[in-house]
Amino acid sequence: MIDTQQAAIDPQVEPPASTPVGHSGIRVDLDEHPAWAVSGFLALLGALAMLGVTVWQVIGVVDAAQRGAAPTTPLSIAIVAFVLMLLLVIPMVVIAPGETRVVQFFGRYIGTVRRTGLTWVVPLSTHRRVSVRVRNFETNTLKVNDADGNPVEIAAIVVWQVADTAKAVFAVEDYESFVSVQSESALRHVTTTHPYDDSDEHATSLRGSTDVVSAELAHEVAQRVSVAGVEIIEVRISHLAYAAEIAQAMLQRQQAGAIVAARSRIVDGAVGMVEMALDRLEREEVVVLDDERKAAMVSNLLVVLCGDQKATPVVNTGSLYT
Image 1: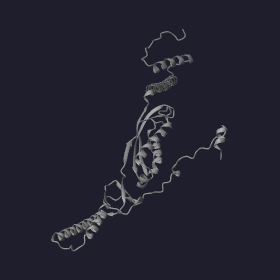
Image 2 (image 1 turned 135 degrees about the vertical axis):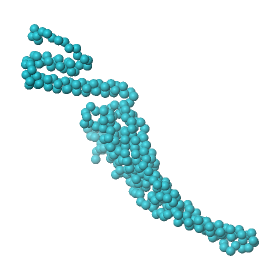
Image 3 (image 1 turned 180 degrees about the vertical axis):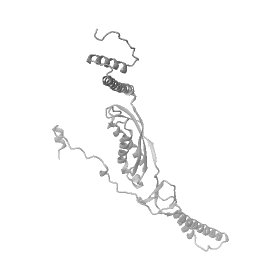
């Protein structure tokens, strides 16, 4: 192992790279599993029965007191029935579609309830609501330097869903904030690895390869948030532009590139038309041209075909050699 002090003294010796932080170094032993739960309607019937017993016993005690006689049943029965009613009512929860309840019993995770409707969970337990609906948000517009060092403004829409409720609640402090921050971090990293625009049609760029960049971005965001039990469904770039300080210069650059590309195409077409004209004249023996006459004809045709303005014809009544 290389000593860091020796590496600081000797510039030829490089210190070892630090161990990269990844999911292999994170200890999250919790995985979602179902919690014990039954239909809440049975508990509701039991609670109503205990309520009836409590009311009946209280009425009996009050009636006996008014008559000055001893109650036929002790008041403790009403107290016990009331406590049983509370034990039946408090654990009852109403779970809507797309929602879950993460259940803890004295701080210990005992499972997640995914069944919908009126549900009765373990008594004396606490339960936290966690939505498993598909959600989306748009990141802030970030100013990042692309692979060429040009500042660009970029934002993305992230579509995500909680897949493991146990990790979402216990692995991170706030899974919604965690997803937001990690998405912006991944967006910054992916932006720095690609240029905004590339003249090579086969190269990957932010503007020309949106689908490829979006897939790469979704893959990186998914890796970063997997520790929180979150699945990334889709990531799409919603805003992409050069920063204001270089937008005008880059617009002129794009215009110049478009002009050069258009000129190149015009020249290629003009050369092809000239070659076709010369070949046809020679093949059909319309006129016999020497090298000097061919050069003059090529020059005139290229001027006519490549010029920006309409050419004015000039009739030559003399000879090329006089």
